[in-house]
Image 1 (cartoon, rainbow over the protein chains, first blue to last red):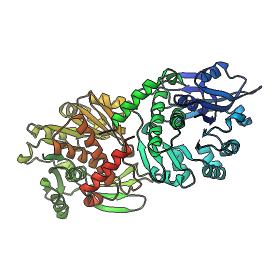
Image 2 (cartoon, one colour; image 1 turned 120 degrees about the vertical axis):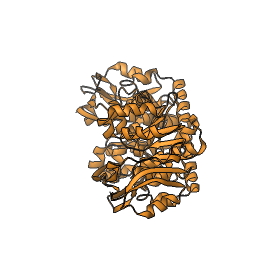
Image 3 (tube, one colour; image 1 turned 90 degrees about the horizontal axis):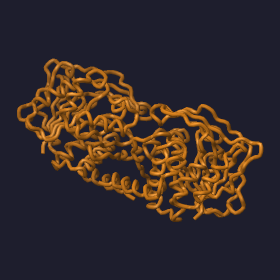
Image 4 (cartoon, rainbow over the protein chains, first blue to last red; image 1 turned 180 degrees about the vertical axis):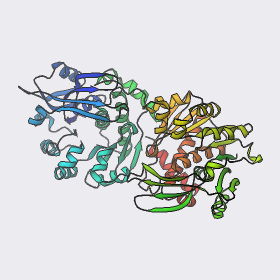
Length: 300
Length: 300
């Protein structure tokens, strides 16, 4: 079943302790789409500028990603982000952000996207996320991401959003900021009480936690020594998770856990190279093989 | 099969954001012993001063812990530690350390302890740990803990120790310090190459990682919202792990993983109250019930 994602499409410049890559393909909606495309057809909504290389669009199209919602703004420039990772490859510093068209143009939903049953609202202002939701007709599952900026500055909109979504995905530091609670178990449950039926707290190299009314669990990240570029790990996690759920259209507790595991594994591949380079060469067979290793690792 | 532990016996003063407890029972050998006593008879070796409350000895004796290696130094004072936990209950600051007898007296091994097949060398100077090993006759399994102080200042002794032990348990920050590598997967393998057949890296609230020549895995901590006092979590983890291995005398890969899971669960109970208060009331049935929950959490 098709999965809709609305989010940023970017040209990233990434500094790691070993290497710098300039203007590579990035953005939350891009990482999400590609990760989800292992499981299900994806419909991408976002805005770019005239500087957007057409080859990126062709690349996304080659993966069952419908790019008819990718709007090219005449005279505009694509969103650009520049960041530097520290030696530990977990902490990063944003060096430059140029919102460009992202700051000016609200992405418009093509009509045939409005009945898409699965929706992911990648990180964006809660106001913009709500505007997307307002256009959707009878979605079966809506999951959103958010970030510290909106938690600090857009509290009321965020609370409205929370009442209208089924699931929320956010980082551990954001969960602590949102609740003022340093204990992630309590924080997760508190956020769930704000509206979402389930909450996923991403812990980076330490995995992810899941909260619903009946269940709470944590799954570790897949341990890897090959961490080249963590950019997009969180978005590819969400893409893997939502992609799996959309493939089967089943939101039972076992499916949700399996979906989270797929998200963790896709993210573990994503960090093995810059941009989407590793996901480009990843096969479903490799993914399933790592899933077997992961399940073996967790059984005793 | 009996398990020997050599380590500190202490009176701790613990400041948490909610409460302060003065001069409560603590020390690495004490937490370790009590945790291991759920599985196997324990022989404790350590030194205390004349101020040591006899009731603590009686309490340990009541749990199959042989305290004949607990030496009371006439005119001496027991090791005291005072620490304060931050709001996140993960970071802590040491406010006071009084080594007292711990700085003056090397613990002596009773003769009938020297053939003990299972040995845990709790955190102490590698020189002292080696001296204990020199007295042991044909141990089957020797595991040691260490800390940043020895990594910084006693490198040569530590390298000698590593060549003489079967397993090493240390914290994530210590593993990074020891190897200069921020990636824990690489760090764990590198430490293993220094001598120990297996290495366990403790990650606090994020669980623990295991490394042997053939296996590498990570298990998450048991998620709990009840964290009253994390003191002794690492030592009770090691006690649970070593206790389980000593109970069955089997060091196969599945046993080692199960042992690590027991360590994680005992530690998860330990943090639920000050000192050994929670472990005192813990039953083996409660522990097994949490093990079932934990295994269910990790299966999908």
